[in-house]
Image 1 (tube, one colour):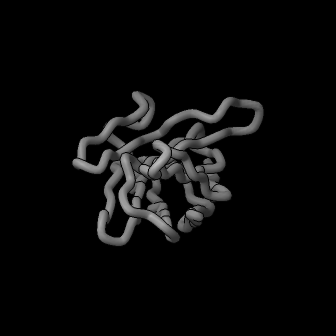
Image 2 (tube, helix red, strand yellow):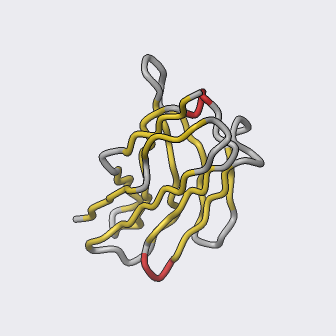
Image 3 (tube, one colour):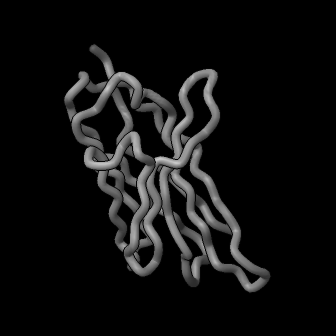
Length: 119
C-alpha cells in the first residue's frame, strides 16, 4: 500500500508565497509522475502542475510563471513553490502520485491541504 501526505498549506496574503510538500511512502518501486491538483468550493478538481520521473514538467496556464514544481526522486517527495499568490488560488490542494505497479499504473491521493489567500 502507498500513503501520501501533504503539508505546508495555510493562510497567506495576496502576493505572498507558500511551499507545499508531499511525501509518498510504502511499497514504491517507481513513480511515473507526481503532481498537484486543487479544488475550490463549487468547482471541479483541476490539475495545477505535474512532474514526470525524467524531470519534465507541465503547468496549468493559470499558474505558469508563478508556481514551480520539483521533486526528490530518492525520497518520493514532490514540492510546489507558489509565488505571487492570487485570491483565486484559494483551494484545497491535493497531491497525486502515479505509481507503477506490476498490474499497471495506479493513482494515489493525499487528504488535501487548504490554501487560503486573503486580500
